[in-house]
Length: 379
Ligand code: SF4
Ligand code: SF4
Image 1 (cartoon, rainbow, N blue to C red):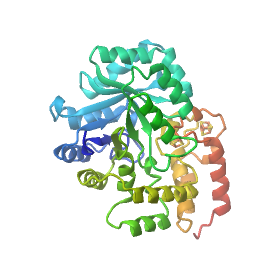
Image 2: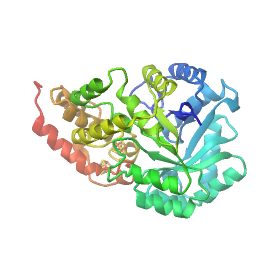
Image 3: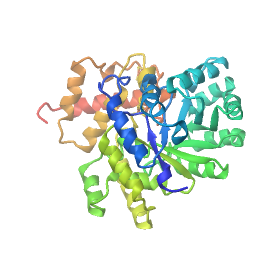
Image 4: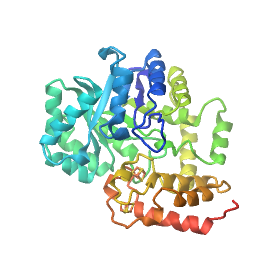
């Protein structure tokens, strides 16, 4: 396996024609990006039943399946674990996914977003046995889980199902490597112990790593002015021996160009670079008000329809750039059609959905206090 073969096209954050409607994908731009990606010899597409409200799978059918020979690309899709209500649902969801994608088999198939409550749902609905049968029947070439919890749960899952799983998809990046909530390092080691390949999601932690303070940006620039912050984050992941795929969610042509450059000229991380990233991780942690990766899973779960990641993004930006006009943005949001952050009823429905284990109602309350205290219409 070459480093180049590790570059996976994550299809959770595709370009959109309407920023407020995730189902409106800019198909023309996505097709162009796919053509460049494929022409350069990359071939792995990662999607799920849930991404872009189902439109991600359809966009892949149009851009990839209908335009390239089946054997020239690989597709990974994922069971919507949280939506399972009976064992029959396994079949129902898989048939819908195959139909949306216009394919007859998946190269990789995951049980999506395993955490404590959804591990139970997957077990209650025989989903581990189901994906094992998918592999035996040739519907999935490789099977695994995407995982969003700590090492204690992963250890339990792998002790029970490690023998049947080929792959674990982990949130892994240099910010979360030693993070006590995400435990990426410990989870990686468990996968190695159980001989499961590691596929990486969120190498940039949903943009938290790159949308940072000017001080941190300047440090990167001084360290190496020729390489982007994103390139360091990707090389951190792809340099790990048991990592076989690193997903990059790309919504702009410039993201694709930067990633192509990283993989076409790939150099494993040096010891000096690793030490530098460890230092930057410490600084980043001080700057991040909420470690939200903007995955959006909480939004569909919230009965009040609060645009939670948008508020957390504003909160983080206001910490990174206290001099910006972010306060104005917050109050503008309260004034338009968005539901205000202080309409949270503390129902807790969102908590099981959060991939980052954030106490969402507590953080919403904290940010409301922050903006009230820090608000200045002249900032
Ligand atoms: S706790 Fe607040 S943010 Fe979470 S689902 Fe309930 S109302 Fe929405
Ligand atoms: S709060 Fe949690 S679930 Fe919601 S977007 Fe952020 S990381 Fe995802």
